[in-house]
Image 1 (cartoon, helix red, strand yellow):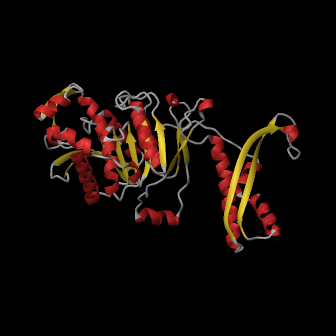
Image 2: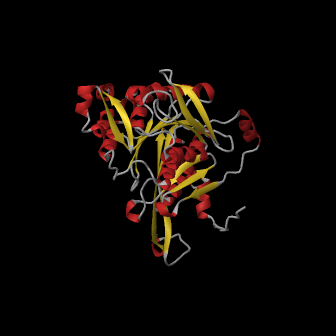
Image 3: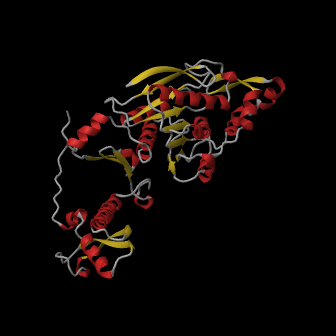
Length: 410
């Protein structure tokens, strides 16, 4: 669902925006999208990313900076500083009318503005830049050949993307004076960039990523262009942002929904989807949780997430840790932490003394359990026995049936 909205910037200009909301009305969080330099909110990438996020339960506001698209103002009077003020105006609109944004997304120079504004958006939990320069003065390369005219005459008309734009010397002075402190961004950060970007070099992404504090993630956009002009690239970006950001946002749920869950837990459905043209990259969903599944580079994947066998090992390791911590709590043992390391391999059946199978290969998981606590060797041995009782362990050693059916389409 989309609705047109208008709101005031920090400089009192009326800005034009479009709010994308989930069709089912259930909003997990709100996001704010800042478009690229001299673009508008209606550029294909912005529309597609906002729609993809809304499909994943994240309501997203895209808007025009002052002097562009449907927003008031004269572009010649805009600057990097006014862009930041416009962003903060969009934040206030969401705070006053919906919910404060937990996700900030910026494309190209919009991403640089998001980095600069992030420190003034306490509600934000996750920040994403897409093809963004590390500092605003990078944009001056588009004014090559006009900088002297600007200096001498105070203004110049520069054709960009087939349209004339008037610039004033104040724009140059403003971007030259701005310093974006990436290390001061306290939110989780994901830097997305295409290695072949001809507008903003991937070296800019490296600068941002190097300066940023953890948690930080770098996401290569493979063969995408700067404007994400191919729809599949923009959809991919939207889906990845949604999956990544859900690790950091506080998902919003109604009190009535909470009561319903308390009465009767919903059936947990796990689904995984992947596109044929995106190698092994897949998005998995388990209830309200989203995460990435992939394969390593040497196997033909893009190595953007754990492999299916990694998740299988995680299931065994986490179940073991939960079981042992639960046992320690019940028995009131002096145990502070249980860590489980899991290795997976396929070995020859003839090398397995306890296996029923006599030829071929069998899967083997080895658990290394570290118990941090003040317990006796006898209790330690008992806890190793308890580890074998964890439900996932028992599932893996029981007979397992996998039933496959075609999904019925309405």
